[in-house]
Image: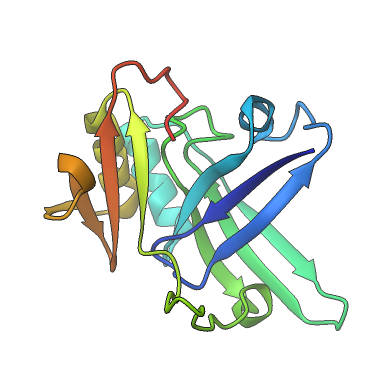
Amino acid sequence: WRTASSASPTDPTFFSAPFAIRPPPRRHRLAPLLEAGEGWADYSYLVDDTENAAERLRRAGLPMRGPLRVANTLAGGETWSLDLLLTGIGAGGEEALPFLVEDREGRAHRIPRADRHSNGARGIAGVRLRVASAEPVLQALATMLGEAPQPVEGGEAGTPRYRIGDTWLDILEDAATPPGRGG
C-alpha cells in the first residue's frame, strides 16, 4: 500500500485525507510519486473560473489538462461537482505546480466545515516546495492565477516566501532536484 495526501492553502477547509493505492495503477496521475514512497503528492488552489485560468495557460503555451468536470452523489443523496484543471502532475507540466479547483455545486457536501483542531489549527497556512528553478514555477503561478505571487518576509532559513491569497508559498531552489520531482 502507498498513501498520498493533498491540501489546498487557498482553501483552508480543504484537505484530502491520505488515500491508499495498492498497487499504484500506472494510469493514475500520482502513480510515479506513489512508487517513490509515501507523503504529500500535490496541492490545489481554489479559483473562481477554471476556464479563464485555462485560457491564460493556453495563451502562454503552458501544459494543462481540463477543465474536467468531477461530480459525485453521496450515500444520503447529496450531490457535489467541481471543475478540475491539472497544471502539473497529470498534465505534463512542472510537477511542483498545483491543480486548480472551481466549485460548481454542493461544496458543503464535498468539504465538511472546518473545526478548530485541538492545537488551534483551522487549516493549512501554506506550502513549501523544492524545485530546481523557482522562476518558471513563479511565472506559471502568475499566469494561472492571473496575478503574480507577492514576495513577503517569513520564509524558513532564508527560503523565499510568496503570498498567494491568504496563504504563503515557500520555494526552495535546489539544483539537485530532478525535473518533475519537487516536493
